[in-house]
Image (cartoon, rainbow, N blue to C red; front, side):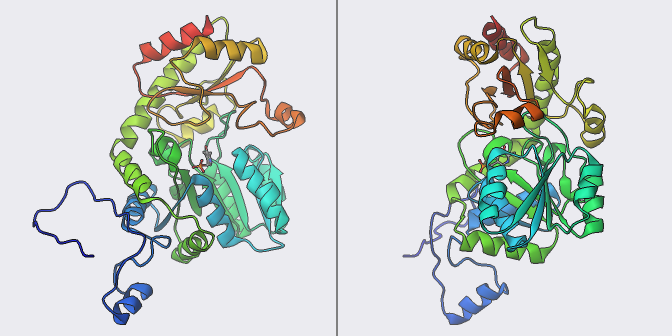
Length: 379
Ligand SMILES: *Cc1c(COP(=O)(O)O)cnc(C)c1O
């Protein structure tokens, strides 16, 4: 069962190793690999060559010391949090987190006796007040959905440092091309590779990257015990996406900046939310945090509520309605019915999410093509 290397040149593209297990020559090799004295793999749920290769590249991109590639963005979040907390502990979380992260904290961890204090993390005084009682982790997103609020990572990191709390930043909407949270003082950065980093809507994968090796080992152990291995093929595809990441993100962001202004001039659009526009509450923070246009996401509002959105989608097949983001193609989503489907009306109102809101994930097509599609959608 061995693969003969019958050629001496080496492949430029990395091979995909689908093997779920690796054969060892003897017990001494088992000891050397298990202790880390020798590079090697034993069982694919623990680690495999495609995850290791992808993880190394992502750690470089994020400027981190360790990385754990896991089955999804959620797996990366769950493994990291479970590595840090135990029953009776407390977490402070942004009240604008991704829906499933909110459910993980508010439902799953609550069942295990771990409490979460939700707060408006854009208000640093609120965070400081919440940190007066011990909290193991503070969780924020660099750019939130769908209001596109930005986290002041540097200031939050200072507060966390003083209180001995881990700052965990979900950087999915920004990617390391726009923001490197570890450089700004975060303890761990999470990316859903399913989105912009994968970039082609064909994988489900996530990564956690951090600075302190001890925590990295702990996160890797949680991921393997709780069963969150990354598929070799998905790792291979994500690895292939990395060389074009900056090109894709920059192009999409340039398009988004132009489109946000264009949309604001359309008569059927009542509101445009984009942190690169001066009417956004985080306009100045965006300029401080991000060089160039701050992201490829735009949220805009139609005056006629759900019916108007439905009509827009029917008239606009060129911009698929799909509840994800980060594809090379422009796509749209409906926060009120997808990401915030299970959020009660009162919370939606507090967050400012209305039934007429559409969230665009701007792609890398020509600006004229995207405008043409949007114009037919707007009627
Ligand atoms: C999609 C997403 C996640 C979860 O990622 P999956 O790969 O779908 O598990 C987490 N955070 C944010 C901000 C996301 O958009």
